[in-house]
Image (cartoon, rainbow, N blue to C red):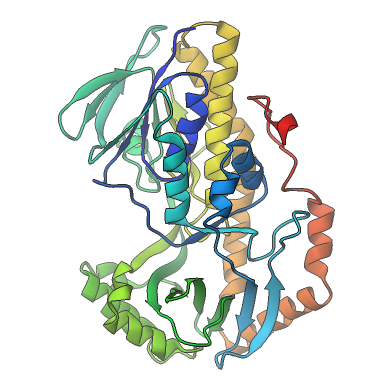
Length: 430
């Protein structure tokens, strides 16, 4: 059977994951990345549910476990740092994960794991400092191609192009055309995260301090010498949106949170202003990508990961999990048709595989995107009374172990059972 020549745009999580699965079929895979080096940065992410299952099927569990963040659990605290409720991590290997997953990992470490797992695979080639500038595709031709022009002026033809460049995907924009409605949906909140120096006594828990005015301060500690700080606020932040330079962004954040009642907030705002560690500041709107049904692909071009369906940059493990799910299902549907035809796939077969991938994955995405909006409102109350109610609700759920009961009823063994087709015959081996 003739191997397909596939171009993947984006070296994050979804792109290399797709390359791993496509390489199993002996295809010719090129992965391009706009940055000059591997962008192994970002905040703490996690894997849940089917993301854990598929990670294991990919054969990277040992590598992932070697770089996990050892986080004891998620702790709600008040503005004086007093504990109000604690949800411990579930390390039992059974049932669903709590606020802290068994598989907590820095985004950069997961990117490195996926890159290392694929860069030496036969047929896989990575090219950095290059991106897809434009493309066209032959329509209605069984032997058609996607004609790609790269940022360096080079041109090449491919059997398929997959966009995995995240929320601002250029592949998505070009595929859908200039008249297509903007799929970005702002859910009404802003998040900023940065690194600060640690102090003796800093908690290893994921701490959550909710402040009046729809704000929160969270910390996570993945390294002995630093602590990760997350500042979240509801509503529009005009000064922050207008900030263009790093000093301007820092000043806007300090002004926005100054005077709020948060545990050690002054310390972290000072670190934001003064510490070189905080130069890794990243700030963005909490945005979902909501494409209408059928818009995850067009002909020989498809989208995966945040480019197709970002749940939000703070999605409780959903974004990372769906990146792995999408890569697995798209590769699986392509593999199924390739084996059935016994020859190179034509446009109709590639399009059918892409549409089936969307049909299988979209229900989970839709549910998570709908849940997240309500969850955000609950987690960021405006008043002190609302914060007290939040603390009481969480304390009650934890004290009565309601969260464990619900988890066991919904998905008693979510970390072991593959809920998607076993395309590559690997489930029996686990």
